[in-house]
Structures are given as structure tokens and as C-alpha cells.
Image (tube, rainbow, N blue to C red; front, side, top):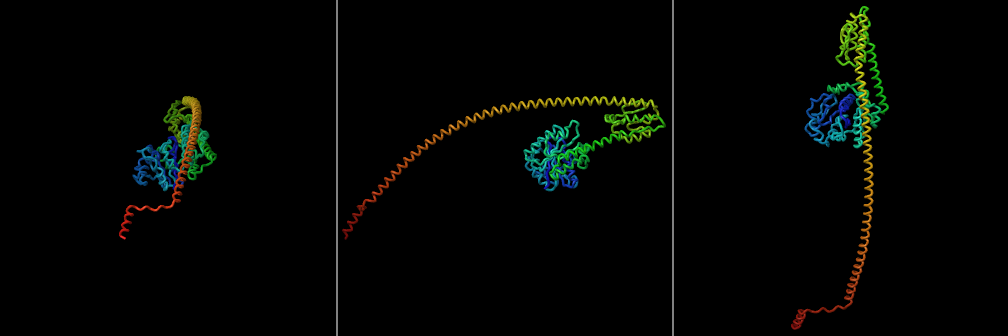
Length: 495
């Protein structure tokens, strides 16, 4: 019998479906037979991220209702890796829940792992999933709305007596306003942390293309190791060890980012002219400078032509190596078309003037961005302060209401206690009256019984005495009937 794993979240949009497909593929690459299935009846989307939306003819409910055999509904993905779609035409309210766990348990006999993409929330579908699952993976992003939702699912786990669950903190680094990892974990106080996964644009792209199960992201796979081991053994890594692995990954990514930045800065093309204006290379440096490139939208460029500068040259997606090679040969391509013309035609004064104008353009372009960033930061700060104030007001309001409810409850409890005391006294009095009445009636009954007994005894004695007297009198001869006398006389006459 294979293990049934349900992936739940409490809130949609946190990567639950992506995790179902990606974890299933990862387990399959480790040599396991895996079935992934969608339990979001009426709102399925697991078929989209694996590109099987056009291959579905039957679904889980068809197997459940004996409309087809399981081979007709299950879609193979790769060797020992299959997919069972959810129904799209009916909801959980329409099909019930009783047979779902039985269906999943039966399918699990043919696999090492069955992974269920559970519906968001805590509705009827998840009640059925709870009964079917041996292990739960709770997915949350480091955002307050997601953390609160997954907290409610954790409470539900305890209510359902399902303690074999662990948390996946997903999409870390996706948003700049996200909660820090340490704060998120401290808030949740989760007993078991399965892993921390970085945000991956690769996974998003593969899911969009319907090829999520075919590829793997090295950074994500680094943090998948403790998760896969938990699935296989039900044992989580110590939190300290898992966090160390996370920080090492972050450090490696930061180092790689810094190295790429340094390499871009060090790649500086030079003018290939006969002693003419070597200073034109600074134009390229200015055009390739990272602060400017980061803020240039696709399609804008900076052109330097005969000492004149316009915003039509440097693309944020230009190939640096290609530009360097072509610029060094005096060509006009990519980010700096006309650099060779500047080298051929512009004098030293023109180059200096071009540099000055480029710096002016840089300042002109970056200033609004900086200003916008400052405005955005101020707005975010203001929003945060407003939210904090509202939260404080809500807490105060809830506290006041709680105190009022507590006072009212206390008063009602006292009133109930007084009524109970009065009732006890009344009942006690009634009981005493009944006992006294019963005692009186019992005495009367006893007296009457004694009288009856004495009278009965006297009657029995009288009857006994009469019987004795009858025995003592001699027996009297029996009187003859008239017929017997007449018969005797007739007999004597014949004789």
C-alpha cells in the first residue's frame, strides 16, 4: 500500500498545484511509482501545469461511479508517473465524500506515493481529503494572509487528530514586502518544518508552458532534499540544519549575483582608431552602467552621434559580449550604434561633451525613478502605519467586546447559580415533605396490616376450635330414606 500525501494551503495562489506536480516529478526521479491527482472538483488546474488539459476523457468521479475503469481515466506522464484529473462539471456538494477515501486507498495499492492537490480552504472537499491522507504538506507564502490561513489548517489538523503534517514555506523572495523567514516561523510555531523554497521564475514559466513535470531548478532542488526525505521517512530535518542549508543557498546566490555584476562592470570596450579620441570608451561605460541599465525599459536606447545624446540606445536585454566585440571593431550595433562614428569623427572635446551629456541623461532618467521610489516607500510606510493603527483599533475593540462578554457571562453565571441554589432548596423541601408523608402512610399501612393479621389469626383459631369439637362428638347413625324404609318393609313381607 502506497502512502497518500495531501498538499493543502488554506489559501489559494501559494503554489499548491505547482508543488503537487514538482514534488511528484522529483519523487519519480528518485525511482518511485507516483500518481498525482487533482481533488479540486469543479476548479481543477493541475492538468494545465502538466499540459494534459486536452487529453482528459474520464476523471476520478467516473472511476468512483463505475462509469469507466481506472486505466481509462489515469493519464501516463512518464514511466511510473501518472496523473488522475478531477471532475470539472460537478462540485463536492454534488458528489458527496464517502467513497473518495476508498477510491484513493484502492489506487494507492498500485503506487509508492499518491499525491493529492487538495482544494483551497477548509470546506467539504478537504474533509474528504483528510480521511484519505496519510500525510499532509501545508504550503504557505511568507505573507500575513497566507500565514493566517495555514494556521487555521494547522488547527483543523489537530481537530481531526491528524498530526503527521509539516510546513513548506514557499516562494520566499517573491515580494519585497514579504515577512522575514525567521518572523514567519516564529509566528506559526509549527511543530515540523519540511523545507523553505525560493521563488523560481523557471517553475512559473514551465507551469505556464505545461511542462512543469519535465524540468528541474537547481536552486529549488537544493531545498527539496529535506522535503523528499520527510515524505519518504516521515522524519523532518532539525530546524537549525534546514536553516543553515537555506542561508548557504542564499549566500551562494548573492555571491553569483555580485560576480555577474563585477564581470559586467569590468567588460569595457575601447575605441579602435588611429590615435583618435580613446575617451569614447567612457560613453560605452556610461551606457552600460548598471544603475542606468536597471531602470531602462525594453526598447529605450542611448545614442551618441557626433556629440549628441538621445534616449534610444541601451537595451536592458542587450548582449554585453556581442556589443564589446562589435564596438571594438568600430561597428554600429545593439546598445551603442554610432560608437565607431564617434571614434572616427568626434574630437577629444566632442567625446568629453558626449560624456557630460550622457551623465546628464543618466541623472535625468534616474532622478524620477529615485523620486518615484521614495514616493512608493513613503506610501508603503504610510500604508503600514495606517494598517498598524487600524489593527490596534481592532485589537482594542475586540478586547472591549471580550471584556463586556466576560462581564455579561459572569453576571449570568451568578444569576444561574442563585437560581440553582433556590431550586436545590425547593427540591430539598419537597423531598422532606414527601419523605414525611411516606413515613406517615407507611405507619398507617403497618398498623392496618397488624389489625388484619390479628383478625385473621382469630378467625383461623375459631375455625380450628370448631373442627376439634366436631371430631370429639360420636358419630350419629345415618338416617334411612323413605324409599329405603319402604324397600325394607316389602322385603320382609316377601320373606
